[in-house]
Amino acid sequence: MNLSTYTLIQKIHNSDNYIIINPLTKQADIISSDEKEDIVHGRFTEELVHKGYVLDKDEEEKLYRQAYFEFIDMRDNSETQIFFVPWYACNFSCSYCYQSGYEYKSTKLTFEVIDAFFEYITTNIHSKKYITLFGGEPLLDSSHTKEMIEYFLNKATMLSLPVAIVTNGYTLSDYMDILNKGIIREIQVTLDGTAEVHNKRRFTKTKAPTFDAIVTGIDNALAKNIPINLRVVVDAENINDLPNLAQFAIDKGWTNNPLFKTQIGRNYELHYCQADNAKLYDRASLYTKIYELIIQHPHILQFHKPAYSISKFLFEQGNMPHPLFDSCPGCKTEWAFDYTGLIYPCTAMVGKTGEEVGSFYPYVSFNTALINQWEKRDITTISECSNCSLSLLCGGGCAAVAKNKTGDILSPDCRPVDTLLSMGISLYFEELPNNVDAKSI
Ligand code: SF4
Ligand code: SF4
Image 1 (spheres, helix red, strand yellow):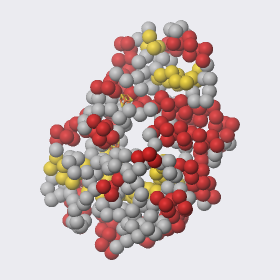
Image 2: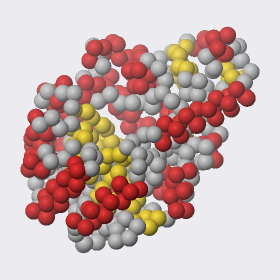
Image 3: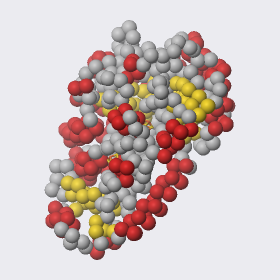
Image 4: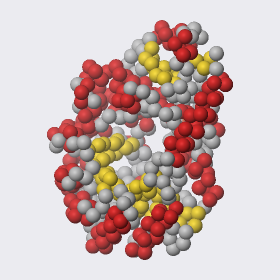
């Protein structure tokens, strides 16, 4: 018997120890460098065989098939996220906005388009679902936009559909009465740092600062029990302000509110050339930088606990997640619609000419061949992934990024899961107890 294809042995960052992990047999252990030497020289203990780090080929194939069917089953039964773009216009002029590279039609959203959207999703998407309003900026400050959002939320409420909203947060306070008409699942708002840093990156079209209005909007939403998902878009320009932003959120009492959560978004080049690519981080260097910041400023973990592949999951749950056969929900559990009547595979593609997979208005149509390609994309259909030992932790990455790079949806978008694991295991299992009160984790 040999080591399983999916057994990964990785040195833990800042440590003499190693992590041995097998996502197929759902095992993970921290081992010493002596134990690691024994393993790489083929000296296998009974425990290694028992835990499935060492596996017979036939047995491995059987487990793989079984896990794949379970994964498809779980995906078929999971919730679908339906994005709707009411307009691509925005009241901000952020320094890094990728949508500023698009040109949009001047048509306006109408009641008829909203009716057609709800008709389409009730007829064609039968799984459990929720809607996410996206833009541009969905909460623009005009009588037309307010009337449309109110009508949209009323329709969603009549169908008992929860709605999430991705907004820059500038007009959140003004929309509070309208939002009360919907079943609001969460509001995603972006703050890129404390006042000075944020205002340098995220300002209005007239160059007005936006930090104070957004903070008031977050306070107002939380006071009305509306969940807030605070997103921080980071690059080299603002990453060093993360400890200050974390402290700000702690001082505001946000981090103690169960309705408050956070996410860190990487500012990356997807569709449209960034003005200054030198500011952008790749995934591994961004999370190395965040690791260093957390070691120096452990209070960041009260604000945000990065996943570091499956490290956080292991730490919090004490067991392994299901093997990841696919990390891209596009055309499976995610769809994106816009006010022009077009349907796209996901948010990364919405509004991009040539990426439509169908239409819902003025008539319903599908590009079945393209939808099939999206639907079949997973690690079993991307040739590079099917031979990759990291595949069950990576899932093949993002189809949009892959297509952008190679022109082919069925190509890989490799994730540095081994490097991320090495840092995450270090942080959560070795460094953390010395840095942070475990109860706050
Ligand atoms: S293509 Fe990328 S952004 Fe779109 S659903 Fe897939 S992973 Fe997400
Ligand atoms: S995308 Fe790259 S790292 Fe991920 S499974 Fe495929 S080949 Fe492996």
